Image (cartoon, rainbow, N blue to C red; front, side, top):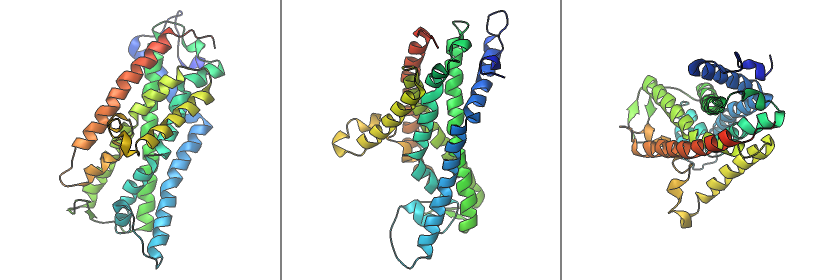
Length: 290
């Protein structure tokens, strides 16, 4: 079945709104996850925690002494902390670049392939199609985060002991409660990438080249990360979409500290509103010729 045939069309019109959206959403999921590029990106994310765990294990067995982030120190005592360590390593670079590639290619890739115009047989179809692409992007964020977290949990169980978890606040909780916190942290990390999905989608509506849209989104991620480390820019840093990403660590305290997490999710919601609206405005008024 071709990409254009994946969404049913009756009498030249779209199905009813809910049915049409679900059809588009299923089509977008299939299109996103069947691509070899997506599979390779998810595989790289899955391998990353294994490499981190092996490095920590080798350094633990080495007679040399050294310091490191608290997550790394905790990992040697409890393998569950490899989940948090892997997410802390992946979130600044690997996860956003992966999401940036997928989001940046969402519209521009279809335009370059010549399949976009076949999906836009009715004016209302553009809004539904854009919403389906954004929702599929969020699902990819969950899948990418899960690839890191699940592999990290498996690798941590193999390489290190499991048991009661000592939080960074010094409190101790049972393994079951710790696993629930790990799931919560993974969901927060995935939600932290929502703003980037909206940005990538907007960039994707500006060009008919998938490669250009992906490159522009990835360059933007790198640029924002660089800007976030200069103390001279402290006045604007709280408005950068990546500024609060690592605040998920506050969920590893007792009680959990939500202020930083809510700032992060609130900032992502603002980016979704601004760049989602910009993407909608551009896409619904764009002359699609390919």
